Image (cartoon, rainbow, N blue to C red; front, side, top):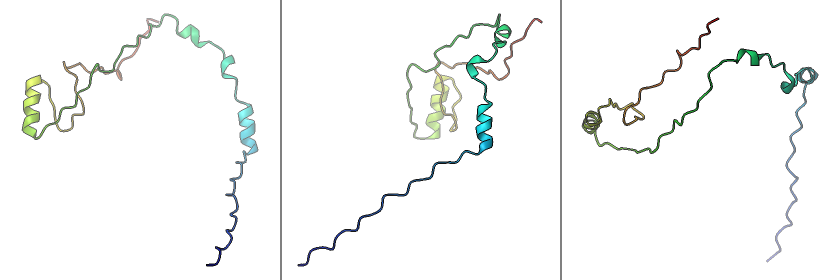
Length: 110
């Protein structure tokens, strides 16, 4: 049995050329101000604003409930006193009032 033919050495994969940054972008980057040295005039506007309070919004426990048919969903919905449809993704029990923040605004006395 003759020996196998010698393996050809494969060339390394071609490297991608480095991207060329147009000169106009280099000048634009040089014009960017140092963000840490920006005037702090905003501090005067924030005087007297209410403190932000972050509440824990995550549930204590999540439970997945499976239903065999629509009638079971209807019975469960009546039992807990919440409307549940096939489009319902989640509920809170006991039912929580949804916080609608899109219409909330802060008003100044000025």
